[in-house]
Image 1 (cartoon, rainbow, N blue to C red):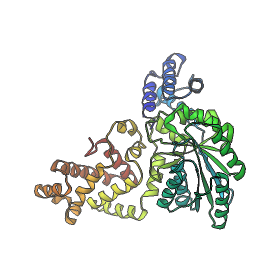
Image 2 (cartoon, rainbow, N blue to C red):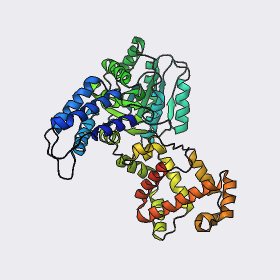
Image 3 (cartoon, helix red, strand yellow):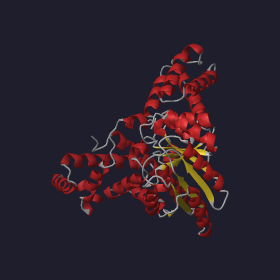
Image 4 (cartoon, helix red, strand yellow):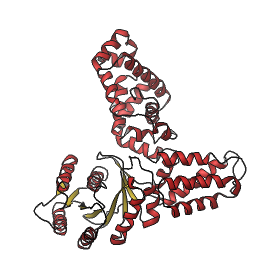
Length: 447
């Protein structure tokens, strides 16, 4: 996520030399490089110029503290302005009605149907609501079945009527159904097209008029860059939507959409999609995204993910074992499985400060963890609890049983020993972060 932009910005900051103050002379080259990095990331030229002019104006003449270099000071100003550019603070969906109706809009292929299901999962599992998904895409043959399949996987009810061809009639009937069945949130998935056209715009406008939804979300593929911003403007002119959802932010996105869209439509980014799994979405926090873009990591989000995933009682049990120096391969396997639940390993590792560039080109294949699990599961109970007894013959048997080789078994044992030493010095959450950092830096089975 934003790897190229982060790399270019950090390279630009390194151009700023000297101590004392930031001056027109020593800042000009850096500002020029920042502007170039933003334009390369597909940020609109006008927005990039206004942004860098503001950064330059705020930075010029600021006193540089003894312990802070001009480069560090410029990073601070840039962080503040990036946060402001992306909206300042988080923006939530107000659940003011019962049911609260959320109308989804966007082009075909933007990930609208998948995100509708993710949003339903979010309200069900994180907000304790009873959502209803509504299939109003009557044109794409697989759309209704796709939503039904996703709903079934998530345990969320889906309202559909394949005989009815009027999206307005389907949506109205769905809201009556929700009122009768005590659904608190109704998420209406609508039809998209390959490009903006009048028929689609008229239809979504009719749905808005008929339903009077409390929230209209525009879903856009962040990998389309500036085209995403142009499409957002077209939809906003017609719908006056409430917020934006950026999908596929885990892909090779240059960042232009995230950095430009707020300035163009003056509507907040509310959520981002970061993968295919039901929980691969996040509330959008501009400050945290600025942290990531500038290579500062995102420790707050990392801790939140850990708190959602890690069992408190398990954590206490592990701390007691660590206090007695009894951390074993069963614990190692348990922690690994907990981390896997948090999401894409590479994305999680990139939340650690300084790790974004370190893992950018690393081959962190989640399938590699299956080798680790296979090795540990090929050990006897005694071997897992007492790794010190692992001699040559035992390692050979474990390698054969796990379909690996002795070198891979030795690498895992060495990694376990390193983790054991680290965890003796840290508490559970810090150790978890250390574990991911170590794995990101030297994956035992990466190519």
